[in-house]
Image 1 (spheres, one colour):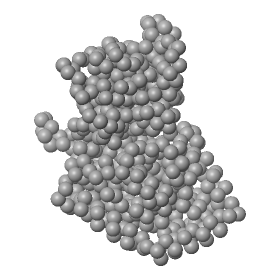
Image 2: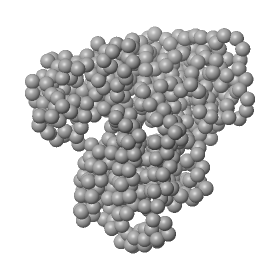
Image 3: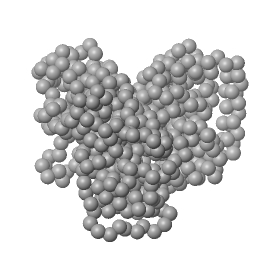
Image 4: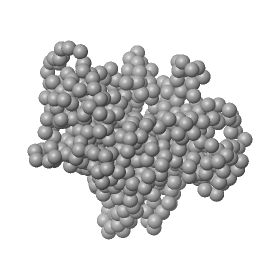
Length: 584
């Protein structure tokens, strides 16, 4: 089928569906929903069999859904209606939730149901659930709905009051008052639910040190207590705040703008960094540990669970130090486990944007990433496995390629390119690591095409060596078991010896320092040159500035020919697709 993805932004869910639909053989093009005329024009150009809306913030124009089958992905159970479906599910501690594929009609979220998929809820943030359970369920439901469309004989479920299949209900948008924290009365579990229900966006409105903030990235702080509402400790970049029956870690905050007009914009940053002066005398405590290491016999596991997968210069340096300590241990296999939601997304654009000199911080950050990558590439006394449980993008993908093997969970999405960030050239030794895996020609094509890639395709082209089972609750245990088998393989010692010979031969042919120097020469121009594209793209990404047009590498229908516009005013009408889901 020809399927047009109509979406507010090309977010994680849109990318997942794009990858899965293409893997199934469908012809897919993307249009960012900028205005009615642009959306109608895209439909006229592509002439799709189906319009699929994974993430919209406004109704599909009636002129489209009245003439084309339009299916909307709603992150709620059958019968759920409203823009804050997942927010309420987290806030109300639902034990199970789901995704529904609804036909767009005149009334919001009330169209006929083509498919649905349910999942058990984890005690996790909205953004984590959206990236994992919601994405998995959406893929399942969308593929089922498309099969039913293709069959031509399926009648979708028309929702009626009292229908036993209708388990959801209409809910209003979640307001700040619905998740306002009463630090004197709310227990730890309640505080966690409130912050998690707003994680990613918009955050919980609160105050710290008498300054208005929004709170994100909350975790339990077991074994601690204090005066409810007080900040009692710091550690790992987070601040610990007491509840009425314990304490929670607050990993990230965003200070509210000082002027009501919003002219001065603020960033989501590590809480300890934002309140460095206020918390300088607080004691340090353990518990919020993005970097963790453990062993199982001859296998070492180094996890680095950085918020949103971004790696600042300081985090790269801390991970380098942990990596060096891990290399002092007598293991034969070292697994780099990343985090459950993300493996790595490369340099930390938020920290760069917050710096006094973004160019200087960009330079410092990319050099720290390069140092870490070099450490992995030059490890020759054991096998190093990059085990990707969550997605990876840009420099994070090439950091993974520094390992001897890349294992990746089916269902995650990789973005092995840099150019979407203002035509950034990229470093992390990609000019060495990528061609040695896929060849020079394919490496050039991958970097130019700027499209997300699923694990199946990554395995076919050579970016991934081993595919991990999708959605397995004990995935980390499976990874450790496979690594344990690898460490005990009789050929393990021979593989390590072969690795040493190859590294020596590669270095003799062209030194790593030369690859790095050539890459950084291009990066220097990105950071300090006359072309501001990188700085503009970074600003727009961090502050979520909507795009004014769909990039041609996504909008294949626009790249193929002329762009005729339909005449007349854009029609508007209600539909069932308004969703307040964060761009994650």
